[in-house]
Length: 406
Image (cartoon, rainbow, N blue to C red; front, side, top):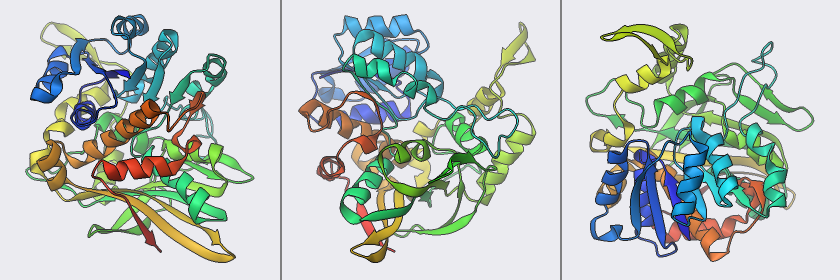
C-alpha cells in the first residue's frame, strides 16, 4: 500500500507517528499547503521516517492532488484536512483510481425556510450522490473513519451484530474532563470544525420519520462517562453518525450528543451572535489596503493550534456509543467506549489525546484494507464492514476499548 496523506496538522502528524510503527504500507507521502508542516511531521519520525516523504499541495486543487497521487504511485488518499476540502480530495481520488478515506464528510447546508425542523443538504449528501460512480469503477470511498464518526460507528455495528437482537436507540455520547493550563478557552480540536458541528442544526433520525433537525444544543442530558471522567452535560450536535448509522444498522432512533459544558456552549453562542462563525469573506482594513477575510478563519487564527496544547492539557477524553434494545427477550442497555489519557498519549506518541484518538482509527482501517480484512466498493461508512476485526486490531495497537452495562 502507498498512501497520500493530505494534511499535516495535529491529526495528520499523529497519523504519521502511529503508522510509523506498523509494517502494512510501503510509502506514505505527507502533503500540506504549508511545506514546513509536512517536512516537520516527517523529520519528527527520525529513524522511523524512511517510508515517508514530504510534499506541498493545495488540497483545493483537484488536478494537483490527482497528479501527486500518480507521481508517487499512491493507491490510497487519506484526507486529514478540514471538511471544506472533502469534495476536491474525494474527486481527485476517483480521478486517480485511488481508494479514498476521510474522517469527516462533505458539508451540510441548512434548510432555507425551516432550518430547525427539516434537513437541507445533509452531511455526506454530495459524496453519496456519486456512490454509483465508485461502484461502477469497483472503487472504494470509506467515509467518516475517524473516532466520531468512525470508531463510534464500528461500535454501533458491533452492538447490532453481537450484543442485541433488536435495537431501539443508538446514541453517540462524547465527553471529557480535559483542561488546558493557561487558557480560559482553548478547544482541543479544530475550532473551524467545532463551530461547523455545534452551530449547525443538529440532525436526529427516527424510524418512520427519517432525518429531521432541531435547534442547536437541544435536549440536554447529563451522561456519566467512565474511567473517572464522570457526569458531563451533553447536547444534540450535528454529526455524521446520525447520517451513517441508519444506512447499515436497524435502529429506531439515532442521536449524537456532545459534552460541551455550559461555558463552551455560551462561547459558541456569542460567536454566532457576533457573526464570527461566518465563512463568507468580510472586508477589513489592512496595512496595504482593504483585505477580505473569513470571520471563522480569524477566530481560528486567534486561538492556539490544538496540536500544540498537549503539554498543557490534563485529563481524559472519551468517545463512545450508547445502545438500548433487547437481547434474548430481555431489555439491555450498554455503553461501548474508548478512553485516551492525555498523559499517556503525550508520553507514548508526543500527541495530545483528542488528535491521537482521532488519528488512530483511520490507520487501523488502512491496515485492514491493506490485509484484505475489509473490502468493498462504493461510498461506504464504517458500519458497512465487520466490526470485530477492527476492534481486535485497535486493541493490538495498544489502545483497548471498553463495554459497560448500563
